[in-house]
Image (tube, rainbow, N blue to C red; front, side, top):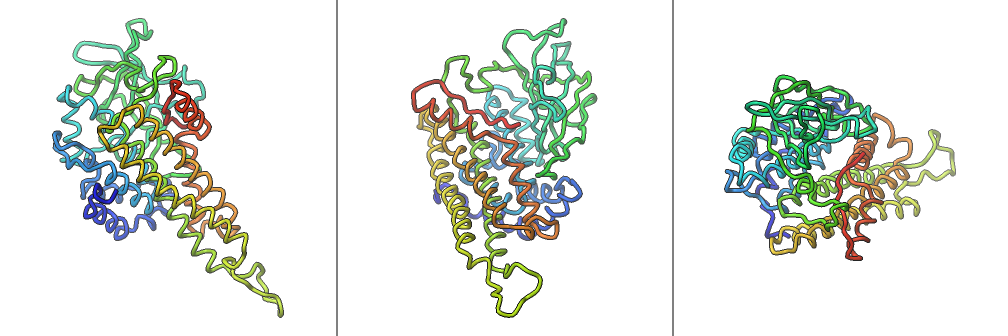
Length: 413
């Protein structure tokens, strides 16, 4: 792992996170539901938006391991900032897979490198909708480009992005879908007819600007849209009878989510370890002869902290061992998908176990606004709620082991 990480660059980002006090700012941003604009500006100054862009498109071509370690350290400071960065990378990776054939898409990647441009990614159903068949965007071909309307939800990074990254159904004059192609859209956020509806009022990750995008008769030129086969974009569907296969490029931003979660769980580990050492006694009055022992001396607390530390440490070991495999371009794409599936299940379980241990260990002092544990716990639950589902992951691990078609599905909700 060590040889594939650009330690100098990782140290640069880590120092920036500390010096800019991402962790301190996160408290204010959470209370005010405020986008972490200062953090994003600082990360742009050191090239984070373009760090995953390949050299042939003008980027530094950092490795998957470097990218994962960078997002881990960003998340240790502020998980909302990390969520914004990772969502940008998700969209950029989709564009990257088509950039060699589409010069206009390659130009967008160069914009990420040269200007620090970022994407907001949203293709989920809006927060006020449960039936996916009743929402989404629909675009039809018109002279010079595409015209369409719709609503897409959970577009993380929507307040600081340059471009919207989403998908739409391709429809005809009758507004009915045409074929199995869909439209990948990445228009400028200030395109007439495209608006951000500030409706993100979630329990955690309040600074991530994960809003709904409203599209009303918006015209999008061909330089900001391209058609792909639906099955190609999803990479696999069980209905198509194929096993998942994942390229190195597609795996980058997905496994980086594991780094994002790891950084956040490291912060919780450190906060709880400090709390246990400081907490003494259980009453407000010290009665003579009543011991005021440290919480850290309690066997149950030691065991609970041990469980938490185990999951954080094992998460780190599993994550970076998997990153080393996933980076191997000679690895079979189906095997890569299996590795990614197993890794994200382990990291997901890490988040769930850390959340449970946090609830047990923190006590009342951990769940008040005066202490950062309350916010970090809510942010962790935000991570748990919005990406991957443990039962879905473990089911598909079993299907892969049986040689059956399996799905690598990162959708949340």
